[in-house]
Image 1 (cartoon, rainbow, N blue to C red):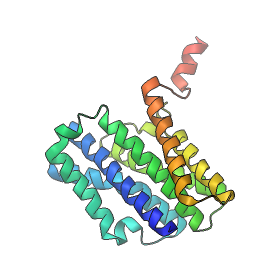
Image 2 (cartoon, rainbow, N blue to C red; image 1 turned 180 degrees about the vertical axis):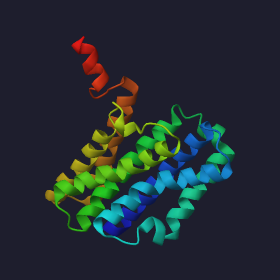
Image 3 (tube, rainbow, N blue to C red; image 1 turned 120 degrees about the vertical axis):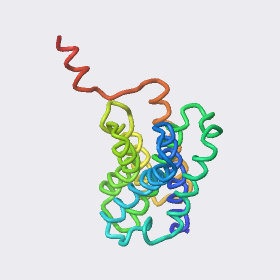
Length: 209
């Protein structure tokens, strides 16, 4: 059951991150091939980093054809129907938040399944969540969101810590995953809506004046 849950979370995260990557590519006027490349990179970079770090090689995104198909389907769908998808307010950021939540949870659960220390499993879950967004932004020559003042990595870490807590308390995996993903998603969306930010060097410099 845990293996099935991990696969479902992974593929769901792959799809929504691929949508966010493809939509970002459409906004930057990339061609069809560029959009597909960006959708795959955004969807699978975090999972590949996670699998390499825990020794699950070759990574699932490379060894399992479903990851490639899901990412490319999301890219093709976005290319032909991006106007409909963009009607969702802040669609890139919403899909990014959903991907962040799903991957943070899946990454933590997979790390725990490989018997990692709970604290490091949470950190790896966070890395899984932020990896796709980092690669997407770098390919588009933008400063990754995780390096700006936005609440991004902390949202992923919050979801990951809920998974770890559930594991330590021996709670059922599926309900814990739902709660953890919902918490991560809610924190990220609220941070965007209410402009929650971490202190930055610029803001501290301004106060010093």
